[in-house]
Length: 128
Length: 141
Image (cartoon, rainbow over all chains, first blue to last red; front, side, top):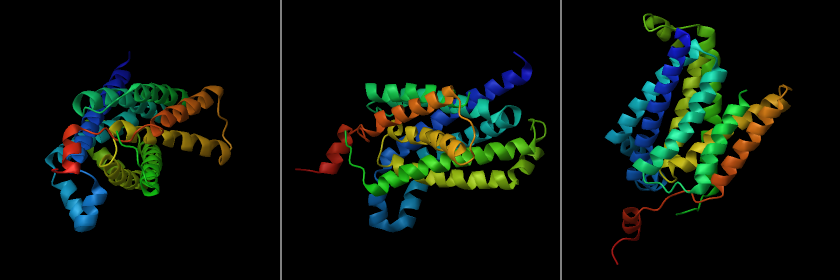
């Protein structure tokens, strides 16, 4: 493996790990916060924005997404978008399904596992 | 598990789908035109962030973030995520029918797999109902 390729895959790994952590933290924060439509009805759009921005879990999630975003920028500048975009997107589907089951206790039933695998394979095929 | 999505909520999921794919594409095009960036020359990264394509990509991804947060407040992460993948299908179909690009057999297979995967999730429940959530919504008896 040449050095730039190692860098590319290291950046892809960083994107996947930080994106998964970000997705889980953000989804967890929104789950705790509750339905935004109800919050908006009760305290208006600014109340909803304040409620979202006052969640420390969400801010940690946004931090992880920012780290993921910068890893993505580096990966995109080194490698083809046709490698980086599908690799990060498809791997993130699988890691997110595992993480959602174990950290968010979502009911990831057979239907959702099949969907995650189908979508992962589909994204890879789409960009060949 | 609950599965009651209004038309407005499906619209939010469509916004999630379109902004994610369009934002990623613009960001990719913008970063390619900016050239390679190394860790030792972070100034080049700042310069790349001023590229109009990158700025447009960032704006679309901010719209994606807002729609995604809204969707995650009433649906599971594993329900919302497939909608971002469906954006790839939209981009491929636009390339075929609008830009008249050729789509190989493996790409059509990929499109079919993503549509099937999204269909599996979309037909199922949107939210796992946790015990504590159930108690708080029903309130004291």
